[in-house]
Structures are given as structure tokens and as C-alpha cells.
Length: 225
Image (cartoon, rainbow, N blue to C red; front, side):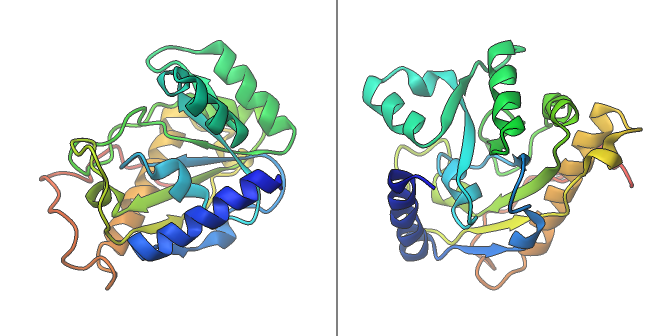
């Protein structure tokens, strides 16, 4: 693990504990070696940091291309293993870069909702990450972030302290994707994230602290294994 990456992680971990009283569950679901795709819901600007903060391995991040416009910020996030993707398009360059990193054994974090939630709900997820996982023969790990929407909703210019929970679900392995469509696979991952959200909303750390979700927030195309 690079020294600069390690120092940034240590600082971020301290902030998570002090400001967000963060808790992480089921890290054992994330493989310690080899290529992995973390499939996360998207609640706030904090999410790329939150999704990987407690993992004992260096991580990589697919990030929207507009974040790379500022020279100094681009230098920072590139040094922390981020690479750009153009939202709303089939960005061949970003796909090739993701495949290259996965084949070298990297853990790559993606947000298939493509943008932050407006109201706390998990938006439909784009199935392109499943195609990447098939081509690189890596597992997809559903990753839930809960409480970050309250800490820094997209409507707010600045963050404020709020408790956050991160949890990792059962991976979807390459052999389990073999006979399923990409849409079925992404719906399985989304369902697992929704199930974790429903479970951890009852956690004492978050009880009575989360904003009520709109009606039908968890409805989707339920797919069983």
C-alpha cells in the first residue's frame, strides 16, 4: 500500500470515527486478494471514502470525469487511484481501464446509480458493471452506505456530523452470473443492498436519526437466487 494512500486513509478513518461515529459490518464478504468490484449505493460526496475506508487493501475508484477538471484536485484523486468515466455514455476508455486494473488484481469501487440520491432512495442501477465482471471473471460485492445522505445530501453545500453505517453483502460470484442476464444480476445486487438498508435502519446508532423514506422506496425487480 502506498505511503501517501496509507496516510490519507488514516486521516479519513479518524474523521469517520470523530464526526460520523462510523461502523462497518461484514468485511469478511470482501475478498482480501484478487480483482473485485464493489457495487455501492450512492448517498453523498463521502461515499468513495466510506465504501473502502475499513478494508485492509488499497482500492481504486471509478469517478465522474467532471471531478478531474481542476488541476490540483485531479492530481489528488489520481494519486488515490481514481480514474474518470463519462456519465450517461458507454465510455469504452473507462471500461478498458477498469478491466486492466481488475486483471492486475485491484479492488475497484463503482456506483451504478451514476449519481447521488435525491431523497435517500436507491435509484435503478445500470447493468454495465455486470458485463465488466463477466469479462474479468471477478466477484461483485454489494456495498451499503447508510446515514451519509443525512450527513451530506446533494442539496447541501457543506457536510455536518451524522452517524454512518457501511456493510458488505454476500458476493455475486462469476459462476452465479453464468446463466443470468445482466439485468437479473444487477437487480440481485440492488436487492441485497436494499435488504441491508432495511436491516440497518433499525440499528441503535441510526434509530430515529434517518429521514423517513418516500413510499415504495424499496420496490424493484426482485430476483431470487
